[in-house]
Image 1 (cartoon, rainbow, N blue to C red):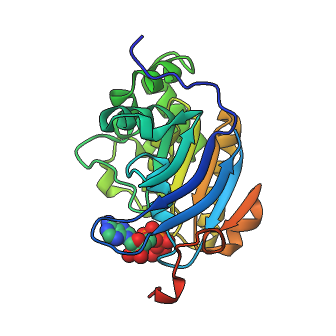
Image 2: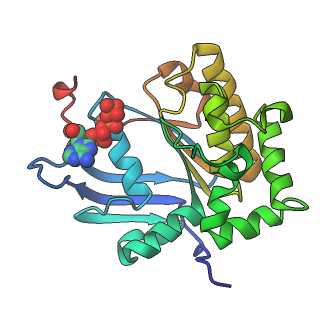
Image 3: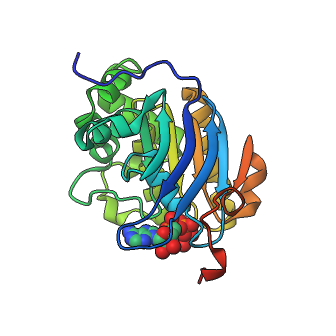
Length: 244
Ligand SMILES: Nc1ncnc2c1ncn2[C@@H]1O[C@H](COP(=O)(O)OP(=O)(O)OP(=O)(O)O)[C@@H](O)[C@H]1O
């Protein structure tokens, strides 16, 4: 079949001697000697504004390519892949939840959840193994994430922020990618809803065995993770004094 099966990994994510400088900048945004995430591990990444959190997630996703060092994801060194193969590898193996959710307003809720299966034969196949058909699997995820069937016919633009966020989480989880990456997914929610969302996300990740890399400013969420990383302490390029 024509999809990129993962090589067997020593660590789910392994970063060594990473240096990344954004185009046009004279100072690196990332300088990390070593960072590893184990299979199924839930890691909380915090750090002040400008400490490189989003840049790190972009590097893990192969969206940007470091000028030096190496990132292996599921045993695959990302720098050896062409841009097109990196894109495919990302959609096959990593579910992203962005701060702004990036839901497509012209698609139904179910079709938003199923989007990764449109781009990835690997995710589609894995989703198929989970249920009778893809729609049933998407619906099952929405129910697990507390999004009631009465809402499924609504345009995504008519959902609350918390509901949109749960659709985005279901989309990241469909087809059981090995890694879920979440960039400040709770920043628009009040404290109770943040905790509830994290409950659901962690439960689903535990069930699928996915590693979770969760970026947040909110230290109240930190204790619920296997490991906490203060990025400004390990990112030697970080200049948080410049933070807004
Ligand atoms: N597209 C870009 N082009 C140039 N510089 C960038 C770009 N994106 C980020 N940077 C710079 O890289 C550094 C790290 O930014 P990054 O967005 O990764 O930080 P962050 O920790 O995610 O911040 P925040 O918490 O504010 O989202 C900052 O100095 C920022 O100005």
